[in-house]
Structure formats: structure tokens, C-alpha cells
Length: 116
Image (tube, rainbow, N blue to C red):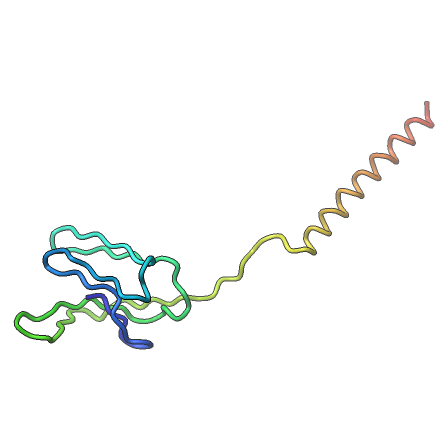
């Protein structure tokens, strides 16, 4: 199992010893995993702020319903990221700069025309 353990405890992924897997609803289409021998690599995509938590891997104890956790887990902290890009005010500045350059070019052309 891959489990979220503290903020909002829930199951994330289950992989059986026969390689059958179950991805739990909150992580469907947001999780990939690969298994090589006894190692599993898990990648989470499109994380949301409420995905922040401590994630642990756990194994099912044979002939029991108990889970065995052998490590302290991995803390995942998702921060909100501000979208960057050109805002309307940025386009206004670019437009004014281009207009100023064009007017300057016209002024130079008129000055050169009068000199001749």
C-alpha cells in the first residue's frame, strides 16, 4: 500500500504480490508506478494543496489484516504557485514602447527630409 497518514488519512495505491493494482479514487489519472523485483517507484502528478501529507509504504502481514510500516514516510508539501505571464498592464507598456519607437523613427525621417 501507499498511504497518506496524517492530514487526511487515505489509501493511495495498492499493488498485490501478483502485480494487480488498485489506484484509489482521489489519485486516479494522477499516479504512475513501476515495479522491478521488490522495488516500486511511484510518481504523483497534478498535485493539489490538499495532497500535502506524509506518505508511507506499508505491507500486509501474512495471514492477517494488519499493515507493517517499516519507515517514517515521505513528507510532501504542495505550495500554491502564482501563474506568471503577461498581464494586460504589461501589454500596455509594450504597446507604448513600440509607439514611442515608431514616432521617434518618423521624427528622424522628417528631420532628414528637411535637411535635404
